[in-house]
Image 1: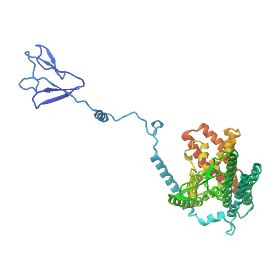
Image 2: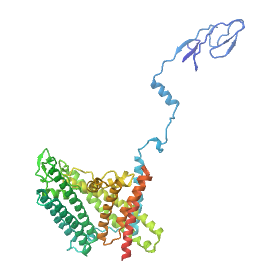
Image 3: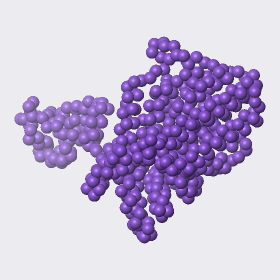
Image 4: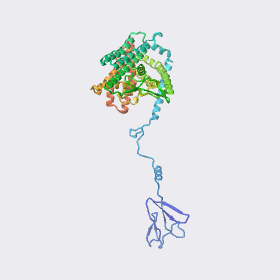
Length: 507
């Protein structure tokens, strides 16, 4: 770009910017002719002389000086572009094509709205029913008679089955009994392990439903642990028989040497693991799968342990308070619509129960799978702390059941699903078999303590199979995740109300 100046007086300069390069010559023109000035205007010549520009002095004309504009840097050009334009090609943030994913503020808003809405419901509950929380009432749920403790006594008796499994393995390790005899002894031991406590719960009138659930829960966990104990030791004997003596493990409770504050554990071969300390470490460890080399943490972190203990005490009190203050009155008010078969009121009661029930379920999940299991793991220096995965991001029902309870998932995968697959079954048959086992134990833990056999829990678990098929084939991404959440929020209160309604009709 050129800058053209008409030079007049030394102190009188008029700059002009043009859009293209133009050269201007100012001088005399032929007589009677016209001349175009730099500004594009025509001037007439009179008397053979070109009229002077008003800024010219004494009729003298000087040639224009041509000045080149300096070359601009990219930074200067970008600044000019920023001043001249303010729009770019882009999508709105809420459009899926934008690729935006930081919704932290919206998540915080959802949490605030959830707190406010539940605070209103809680205040309404207090105004309507008053304070219903009674810690003493919790004790009566487990004990009818303060001098009769059937559930704790039943748990103590479980040591008989633990010793039976240990001494059976010792006889198998030295060849005193055959594998067939050992399998038969385990069959008797594990069958009795399930039948004896259920028969006790059903026959003892002093056994409360809460005490029965606790005792049967302990026996169910012990059944799964001893089944894993049997399988792993059998695999060890198979490896020993093939002369592959390479499988080692750390003692579960060895004599510990201290080195820079860390525990140094020795290693042993099978059958060195068949000790009382070893099996009881496994019984109390937060896992259902026995193995020959438990990962061990180097030390006990006291601050971590105290935090988990505080969480355990706090959340168990919160759970008890919410059940007494929120769940019990809602269930009691739900009985009349069931008696009158008023479906609209039944639906309203179910939705009203869904929110507190789901909140209590979430608190229970954190209390049990995070606080309690991490407390036990830290106390026992158990290194594998993967008790759950990101089940809240589940886009399929199968993913949810595989990730919300990792100890059970590992046991089913290791001792049930893979053995069925190795026998030639297809994936669908193996998954159905796993759901059948899970449905059986859900019904076992609900129907026996309540002394009521209507298979509600069993059918609820088996209904997950068609639901998993539907969600997996027709719903993907966020839609699948929403379907999983809806099944959790709505499915649980439906099961609770059906159980309570059935008990009410029996009375």
